[in-house]
Length: 102
Image (cartoon, rainbow, N blue to C red; front, side, top):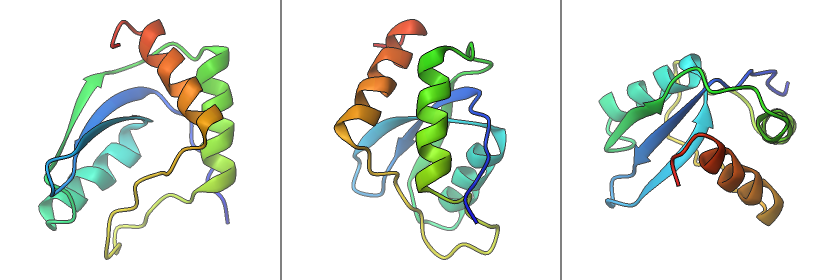
């Protein structure tokens, strides 16, 4: 079953190899990333901005995420980085600009 998440924040994820990236997320997904960090699947996660405006670009990225990914459960055994299409990456880039993070 696909997710039906409402995306409300921007977070920075640091992978175990030191690579960092930003994700448009929500509090539940952020909690899963925190759990992944506690379990050693990623190095860390931190919220960059809460309560982002639900712009047309956020809605478009949200639709893409919900169509292509499922919310990890608390019994996850790995961390899945959402691999973006060029179109999805373009939406994220615009969202970061809208929120003065690029």
